[in-house]
Picture 1: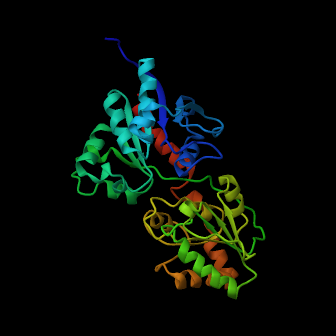
Picture 2: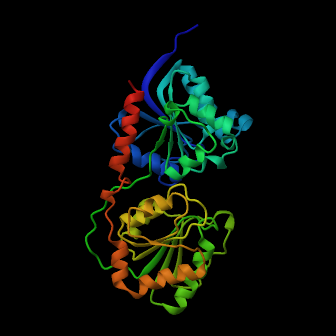
Picture 3: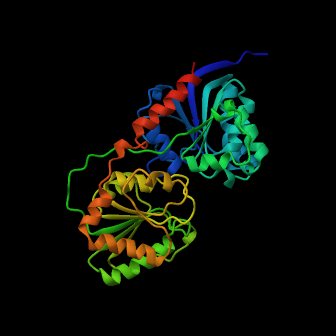
Length: 363
């Protein structure tokens, strides 16, 4: 039997649907890009994805194209088997494998690559994955992985529900937040506008938001509304009949950030338990007066900043919060006066945290 080589690299496996490019990406791709941009291990990192357009620049990429594996085993498991087969053909294991948001993939890889150190990153509620709803599966996953990382304390708590943890297993659980590069924006005259960024779904509270801003438009017609996001499954009839309400659709992430930097009010009315809350931290970082619910991981972010928190999620509460900010420049200044540098959500701190974990795994 051939001896198996161990390559001193960090192999990152994205979910199949995450194409890691400027034109085809999701929140997981942005997380992987941002947290690794300034990693001290960047030269050791290789990202394995199904590439269908040019990738984010500055990274080593290996394309995992569609194959018979995808037809036989399904998209994500086929994607995982292609990843495994790539290394089997080379007769080597990567020293560290980082799997994002696919617990079944992490479990299979841990069995196939027994001497690799497996990191699993949860970007969503662990109990929302069919396999992770089983306490037994989560326990086995924890035993087989080197580390399991979560984008918030909120989803970490959900993962350990009903599991008895020894100290050694507790040490495998890590929170590795999403983050931003702190901005030092010069004071500018901001647009008189209200921004919504996110999928146009009921989970994101878009239906309540759209009802509230319709009334805002009636009473404050000099304020514009800018809406960015996918209208998945055509959940809402999108009309640009009102010239003051503009639907931008899915827009390049960098363009959204530039737009936020010039805006006055951002609203994050999420109804569901957000795993983290990327739009919230980006709005805060852009010095936008921000209104937010406190569901899920949003609460963890809100604790560090001046945010107008929505205690109740309905048309009236959102309308009143927006009205409060429109009516008072002092209120807008108060809720935009935040310093991300003093929080745990800077990319520098988060990257250092992850690199510290990697250093021990690469010894």
